[in-house]
Length: 83
Image (cartoon, rainbow, N blue to C red; front, side, top):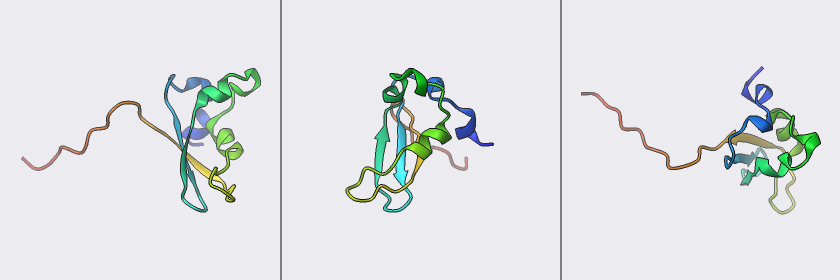
């Protein structure tokens, strides 16, 4: 079991997107979970099921993708070090 098999589409925060990276060509595109949530029968899908349904959007590729959650807002760089 991993986080993709435990997290459903309806558990994702509004406005958060899924990053889809092609395993074949490396093309990256973003998937909006709201597209799936508009259909009642798809709201209860787990993210591993969404990953299996999603294919690469690069022209002529149609390869399998790896999904990752993106964080909304600005990201902060590493600010640690030895004091």
